Length: 79
Length: 79
Image (cartoon, rainbow over all chains, first blue to last red; front, side, top):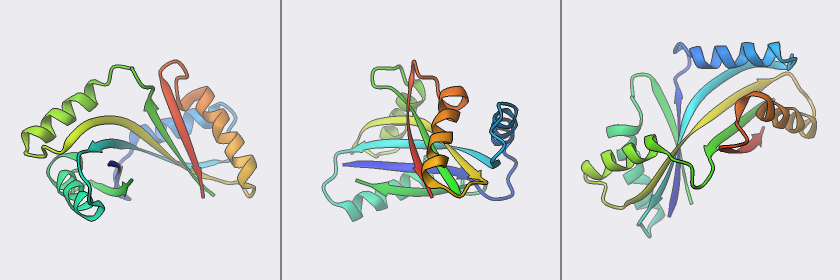
């Protein structure tokens, strides 16, 4: 089973990479760009049959390693 | 309009961050983890009304800045 975790900075956290990408895109002529945020995506291949159980385990992985609850929010997509 | 770009390493490219996360998860007892790949997610807020036009522009952004076509593949989600 595949799982995808999107780890992003919480609103209000400083995002220098996002700010840099935004400036670079504007400089390249993409004037429609209003805001940019950069985060991480973690793709997991799991030996697991049950979707709900897998989601719980991935949540645990986020809490213990993949995300820092102080600064990150995350989304989990299964399958 | 919001757009999300997932930038990942092409299959076969060395992914040391993914390998490190995989090892760390296994060490934490997540024995069901078979493979891990780490990539980047870029969230864009665009001043754009037309979905298809926005997708084309984001594709162009990927080609010019967000992804390196030699080593990266990417997915674009609009809306």
